[in-house]
Each structure stands twice: as structure tokens, then as C-alpha cells.
Amino acid sequence: MSTLENKIAIVTGASRGLGEGIAVELARRGATVVCADLHSAEDTAATLQSAGSPKSSSAKVDVPSAASVDELVGSTVETHGRLDIMVNNAGIYTYGAIADVTDEDFRRTMDVNIGGVFNGSRAAARVMKEQKSGRIINTASQLGKLARPNEGVYSASKAAVILMTQALGLELAPYNITVNAICPGCMHTEMMEKSFAEIAQSEGITLEQKLQDYLDAKIPTGRFGTLEDMGRMVAWLASDEASFTTGSALNLTGGEQVFF
Ligand SMILES: NC(=O)c1ccc[n+]([C@@H]2O[C@H](COP(=O)([O-])OP(=O)(O)OC[C@H]3O[C@@H](n4cnc5c(N)ncnc54)[C@H](O)[C@@H]3O)[C@@H](O)[C@H]2O)c1
Image (cartoon, rainbow, N blue to C red; front, top):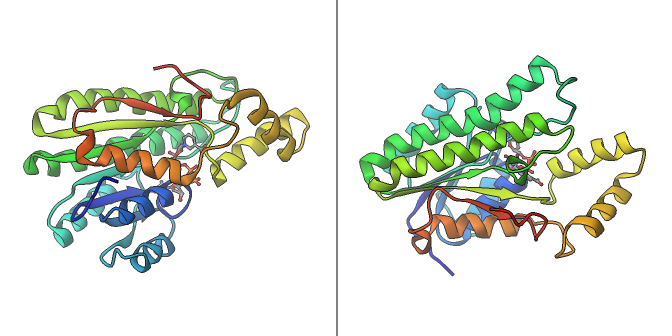
């Protein structure tokens, strides 16, 4: 197992779901993690502390706000002296036909999903360029690579994450910094349940039926992804073992999608 001893990490969206899974895995491998979220991530930080990462902490952040993200990164560097791993994971899901999506939902989705990744990447890049080392890892989605009805706004926001990741990977490679995205498929979190509930309702079937139908039809490995699956992929990208991987958008879908 790769070690992340003495590494300092920030994970956004760490109060629950995939962000929590990422924070737990990074800490398990030795990193000190600042668990950042719009809502309190104190419970996540407490879990890390009791699991042997005593300096891990929580912080409030609103990722579409550059000032809020700059403050998060600045205070992390002030406290810990450096920033080795920036995980821009916070995101929101929007369901609805493009013809029906409101201005507010469109803007909020873009502001959080791509604006948040931009703010986090820019703040981290400035610190990491000085250090001449670092890892930036962005949570995109398989929906950043394919179109489906009713998910166009979310897809567009995640496609933007992938392209920004690729460009930044090229820009930062000379500074010993890698930048990669992960494209999860169906990972069992509150966000996934919410999105499936909306689809089930629109199809007039129960959530349980929708989940089972989807598994049977689409995921060859026969299960949904877990927080641990996500945590392990982030931990690998954050490690020295992944130093030749940059500008990638790696699928984490159990075979649901196999495209590049
Ligand atoms: N769950 C899936 O199946 C799945 C699939 C593909 C991609 N994703 C992506 O993975 C990431 C995490 O998803 P999840 O399933 O854990 O979702 P989730 O809704 O369970 O958790 C998202 C977290 O982000 C936080 N957040 C939302 N807006 C924020 C803001 N403005 N500032 C700071 N934090 C904010 C929330 O408070 C929450 O803790 C998202 O970017 C999502 O788009 C999830």
C-alpha cells in the first residue's frame, strides 16, 4: 500500500459521501487532511483523528467563492507549512431537460461544479508551483463523457472539469505537479440515491426497482461503487507511484463505461 506519510491534503465536499471516503483513505495512509465543506465536516475530521491522524481538521468552504477557497488554502498552508494534495470533490447534481432547467439551477451547477474546481485548482497551483511538487485531483463523472436526456447541465459541468484537468496537467507538469480527474459511475451515496429517486419518479417506479434494474442492465461487476473504491483511486493518484499519470480522466464505473 502506498504511503502518504507527512503529506498535507485538502478534500472539499468531505462532510459525507465520496469526499468522506477520500478523506478517510488519505488519512489511513498517513496524510493530514483538512476536511472542507459548505456544511460541518467535524464528524469526518473526528473520525480521522480517532483513526490515527491527530492533526486532521475540518473547515468551512463555499467552493464557488474564490475568496472562501483562497482562505481555505491560505490557512492550510499557514498551519501546516505546505499543501501536497488538493482534492476538488464538492459537487451538486441537477436533473431536468435543458428546456426546463431554471437560470438559477444552471448557474448554481456551473458555479459549484466547474467554478469550484477552478477556484480550488488555481489556489493550489499557486502554492504547489512554489513548492515544485503537488497533486491536484478533481472529481468529474462518467457523465462528463456521455450525454443522457435530463442530465445535460450536470454533464456539461463535468465535461468542463475534464478539459480543465487536462489543460492544467499540461501547464503544471514542468513543476512536478500532476493533475487528474476521476470519472465515477454509480457510487452509493446520498447524491446517487437522490438522482435515482428523481428518475424513478419520472418513470413511475420505486427507487428499489430502479436501482435493481440499473444494476442488472448496466453494471457488469454487479454492484454499485463504494466510498472505499473512490478513496483508493484518489490515494493512488496522490501517491509517488502515480508520478507519470497526469492530464487523465480515469473511469471508476465497474465497467458501466469503458471509453477513454
Ligand atoms: N455519487 C455518485 O454516483 C457520483 C457519480 C459521479 C460523480 N459524482 C461526483 O462526486 C462528488 C461527490 O458526490 P457525492 O455523491 O459524494 O455527493 P454528496 O451530495 O453526497 O456530497 C457532496 C458534498 O459536497 C458538499 N458541497 C456541495 N456544495 C458545496 C459547496 N458549494 N461548497 C463546499 N461543499 C459543497 C456537500 O455539502 C456534500 O457534503 C460530486 O462532485 C459529484 O458530482 C458522484
